[in-house]
Image (cartoon, rainbow, N blue to C red; front, side, top):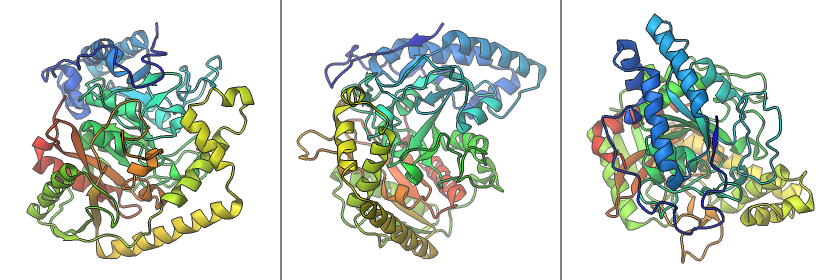
Length: 489
């Protein structure tokens, strides 16, 4: 029997259903074990996938009414799959590297047998749902155990997570705050012990924003490394990537989900390396640039202080760190042209009545997107190409670039922008993230500390195109050097 969570806390910020935050983490519970730890315990016979799945489902049942991280959960299906995995481990015959690990799927990705409604009142749930997206198919083949689908804003259009269909998703660290978006349900689930692995998508920061706001790890890989299907209306801005509590778990996922799929016209070849085996690549001697503001962005002073302290860890690890920024222009206008025309394309088949049912903010950007000309679009694409060239040259001198992942900590749930900011759109505060969608580079957010109010802060690590293993190794080295930067809610 499935458990669906339609309509939780619909329509605005309001008060959470359960005004108390999720209970303190029980760190001895299997729900808080990493995928790596679970797999080791399965292999030793210390723990079974059934026990791990039960622990995760119990947390979902208890905390999802307050968090609204999941829009669909299949407990009976998950437990049946866990029993099958338990039997395979008993025989010493796991089917893949993730056999029996509880995993959630963002409700943007096709999932065989489950509806993919994308947070929209216009999606028809009465369909066969007979196909997996490439990421889901790879995870299924490698034995990942699916517990449910996580919330997203409508068609993943913004950097916070609320939708007309599923309402407002909240941050495990403070229920009055947003977890970010568009992969906010995935981030909240991972942060709250509702499964160690989650899938996300990122067109302008949609794994890095919620990772920073909730204190989890996420990476947007080089575009094309993780296959994408159906093709996104947002085109080559849209990436898929893992969201986890540890870098090692994300490496496990990347080893599973990378490589070509015939349905992706822009697929890259399978990597000639293992992400897991590359994690111990040394940081010593790397040339690292640190840009506190990418030249022009305003950063909350507390966030700036926490990130600056985190950067010192790389110097302690033997890297050569220089405070400098890449020579890329302010690109907000050009990103919005690409993003808004993508939103218009994604909704072009809707009737007038269906358009009236869209998230009001989405409808606004759709209408703006329809005003742009082909010349506007090509000018924005030319800006992308010049940015990509500039970053390619920059990485001839610097192996990695460090920045804040976000200029601010999490703000009020149910809002697109911080209150009293004077801005209208989420892009106004996402200036550290969307430039690297435009350049298609790998970029990760790794937890690096907490504000005095107890809200997480993320450090962004950016590498050259195809430099994904180095980004992961640097994040792993930082995570090891600063274990206190990552906590549980």
